Image (tube, rainbow, N blue to C red):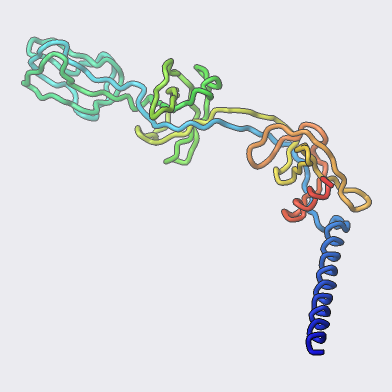
Length: 289
């Protein structure tokens, strides 16, 4: 009798939990398939914006004209006509030798270093004075082989100066014809002439921004508004008089990681329904039924 009583209690217990499980499952299913109305959504308005995407290349600032004055033969230095820090022009006399020969500056620039002394003797090929043109600066950036086709001589580019927090305009003046290979990775060097700015310093890091794609005055939406069906085709949800959103297929263009271009299916000024993250996942599941 005791054994039968225990069996009956176990059956009742399993029956009770079975009913509870069926009830919870029914409630969850009803919640999944019941209409949610517009209260589960937020509205977004399609806007007209420009979308521009860029290739980014890093580099450093250097002088466009950096030259050293060299001795072409053995010399006896008589007089040095400049001091370190002097700004000189091409053709200015820099050194006079014992024989009265004048050695002149080959370019405009600042005397950055004097490597000789008066009354000293130097050998042929010796470096005498270093000149740097701080007025005309460039940045040399590394460009991978796949991006090379987007660059051309005389092309204007934006150049961000990281230390100054500003962007200047630059012009591509040279693109190397041979690649440099480092650790199995090949790249080319593009030289960009910078506009004059008194705050620039040689060695500052730069980031050149080359236009990749652009859509001007495009109809746009935030990326999180775009949904995809089971065939990976994009669509949005439009409001309806009945309250339940309507699926509207669209075609998309470029995006900048924040907003996406809508080419067809929607016009600027139209409202779309934007579900919360959880509702958005549920909505896509429902449309795929």
